[in-house]
Length: 268
Image 1 (spheres, rainbow, N blue to C red):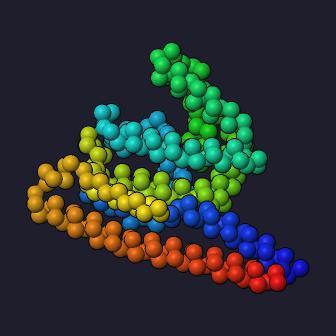
Image 2: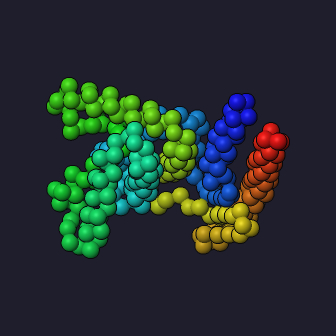
């Protein structure tokens, strides 16, 4: 009985480790210059609200982001990325609203037709399907139901429970944290500018040994002192990140090996 419990505990732990390995098998170091840096701590519920608010029709007006700013597309992509993460979860989890799976698939099909020029985004059918599949984090954001207070309250209660369920999903929360960090980087730039913050240097290390380093061409147009400082900061970040990355990988490998040996010894 004890061995069975130990084996179940080991299997659960290995399953959790597998999810973590998906996130730590690659190291990516980006160096960029921003106008300001937020010091806010990660709060899953607040982060979800922040990302969802991008879909609000007044969002870019409130943020004073010009129509011709590339930031608009980058913000919209963050919302789309979180929606994709949600879609991957609902196709696997029967406790969530699977009718949205069909809506999402139909939207993707219509997007293909839009790209072909067969229909336009103002088509009523597409407008209906383009409604977010993500549950709204506040009753106010679900504007379609404001005229029906009882229905709005019911929808809000259902959305609230679903969001709480989502925020108990480790995979979704990790994705949410990454997207929130990307949004914080966008928020740190000059939102009134038609330019976006530039990643001047990027280094990616893969588990198989591949190391890819990219430099933005604008880096070499900067004054020599600024260029040297950015390269120095980036290189120091790569060295520090590599040490931490290897340390985490070694720890995980040794831990799994020790647990596997412990399991074998327990079966004898």
